[in-house]
Amino acid sequence: MNPLRCDQTPAWAALQALFEAFGRNFDLRKAFAEDSRRFESFSQDAPHVFADLSKNLVDDATQALLLELARQCTLEQHRDAMFAGDKINSTEQRAVLHWLLRNPALAPADISQPAAINVANELAAVHITLNAMLAYAQAVRADDAITDVVNIGIGGSDLGPQMAVLALDEFVLPCKRFHFVSNVDGHELAGVLKGLKPQSTLFLIASKTFTTTETMTNAHSARRWFEAQGGQDIARHFAALTTNVAAANAFGITTTFGFWDWVGGRYSLWSAIGLSIAVAIGAAGFREFLAGAHAMDQHFRTAELAQNLPVRLGLLDVWYRNFHGFGSRSIAPYSNALRRLPAYLQQLEMESNGKRVDMSGKALPFETAPVLWGEPGTNGQHAYFQMLHQGTSVVPVEFVAVKRAAHSPHELPGHHGKLLANALAQAQALMRGKEDAAGHKDFPGNRPSTFLLLEQLTPASLGALIALQEHRVFVSGAIWGINSFDQWGVELGKVLARDIEPRLASGNTDGLDASTAGLLARLRQRDLDA
Ligand code: F6P
Image 1 (tube, rainbow, N blue to C red):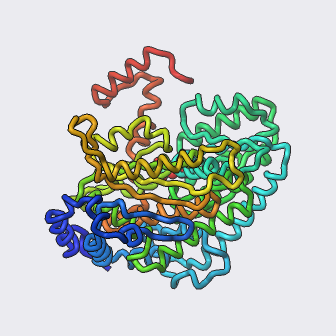
Image 2: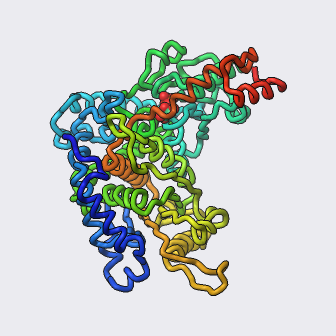
Image 3: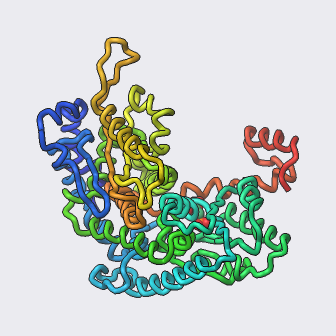
């Protein structure tokens, strides 16, 4: 299967022509005035998530051409190749099977014909590990002597678990505290350790590779602290979550939960990396989380493209990035519990699709991943929404709101209505704008947004929301023809840091550029950490 590059397809040319003729001047206000059913036709129900897409700069003709673009770029075949276990992560020669982590154990019908990898065998291994990990999580939950769980990991080994534990706060076991340490800046770990006792602490060392500098440095420091404070039983107080069990054992950790190279770091919260989530919400809650994501997987696999929410979102992303030229997308979760969602999505989108070459390494002549950014609503309104409403750049906004306040609502009346009213009002204001002769009070309006609505924030709906985001990133990556599953761009800095670190101690600047050498000399004028 060798599809045409997206910008060489007839659909791309037709979209370009449509954009020049009408798309550039598309007016949302007019579109709503002319079509009383616009909300219905541009909204989409998917498992656990309702999406209002009607405030986006698209009409039926654009949507039809975007779907045609998907077909001409063989999106469906690429999706099916992922679900068949093909090694679509070609630069690392790996299959992409994070979805298998949420596949029920006894659902062989869900599994496409094995291709490069025997998916059914992998599924059996997934469930053996899942059962072991959940049994361990339950034991930790029942262990009153453990009051603090510290997840040490970075990137996908931190952002997913941290985001999910915060998001599911009301389902979290109240008698334990959960901490997440990622930064190699010792202030972070030291700040957490200050409040801990070794006999009541469980450290989860989360690292796919078990080689990441930040995580290894923090893990060594945590163990030194543990031993210095009289802690003795490493097997009880340290567990490793990794594909590199041998390295964890060499570190001295015997309690290990493994996973597989076909799980990308930013897709790993469904694996053993999610152990902190499982301890926090329990085995049943974790299974619901997986089930919610699985429901979205099924939707992505089986729903027609025109009614497929990840497909519709991914195609809008392409429309905005490549035709409108919008360089960023703002995430606005109107839920304080989802406050780490923007950070999580940054890694998901930008580490997956922040690429400038195609699968074979050839440079691409068009833009790929937008910059993702955001803060929870309503806080963002009082910071950067000024720019969203009146700035010179158009930034599509993705609102995420939760209909029912909480499973066990907080005791503060009136808040949730205000929160939802603000989300609706901001989306409305972005679209409507407001004419005013005084330029500084004029709002251009016609600024696009998507509104994602969850009935309630539960393990299942969070799982579905995350899987939705994973698949929409897959869709735009597939259209662009890039490998969304490698991350070579993070390697160079790691290598250079390894070269620079000893130079900070020795002062050797041989071969360094003048700027790095100058900064290094300046830094050496001060005391450095040992
Ligand atoms: O450097 C980037 C990265 O490899 C991410 O892709 C990954 O999530 C993170 O580092 C952490 O990696 P690991 O889980 O192997 O420690």
